[in-house]
Image (cartoon, rainbow, N blue to C red; front, side, top):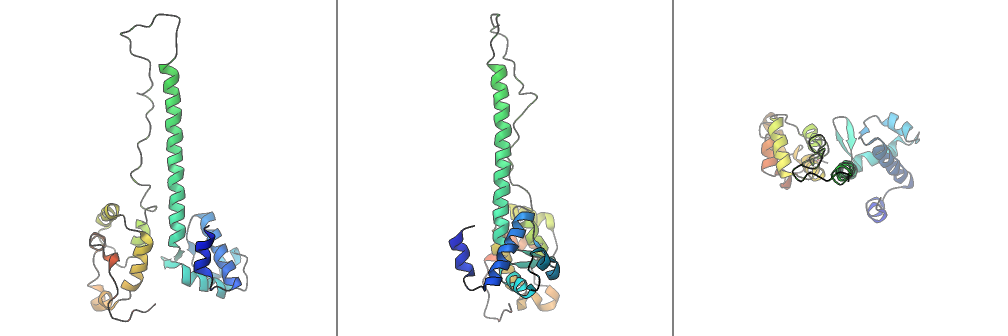
Length: 217
């Protein structure tokens, strides 16, 4: 944890709210998953019985409720980065092992004169290094969080393709969607003017700014 970064965002918290936030983050990183939307359950798991008000205050301020789970965008970024490094380390280990085996077979000597027409023995036809992953998966690049939070569920495959092309920051997208979902334009005529998910992504609508209308928070 970056202590300076943490302090700059939490200096206004009471001691109990600070403790609740730290334990919520510990829970998030330990389980690598969002916080369940059950205040009594999570308060008991955090060993903060009788402090549900403090826990709820921290959840409201630093987390986003999506599909009955509390999500923290910064924690998700850290988890994605950790998983990415883990995959890279696994690939590097496999490639190193294959290279050692190939050197062992290609470089071994014998008592007989080598046949210059004979190709060196190799196991390339049996063992091949894994291809690098173009991306970890839809959950790790934030698309699932976006899809679950977006109010219009149309054209998921097109939306996923657009997301992979644009590669937006999911925390920025979710923060923008918070006010867009409450905007007058998106709520009039039963949501008729909410763009399709793929259109939203292709047009970069997470870069929109609120108009002069009053946006409830």
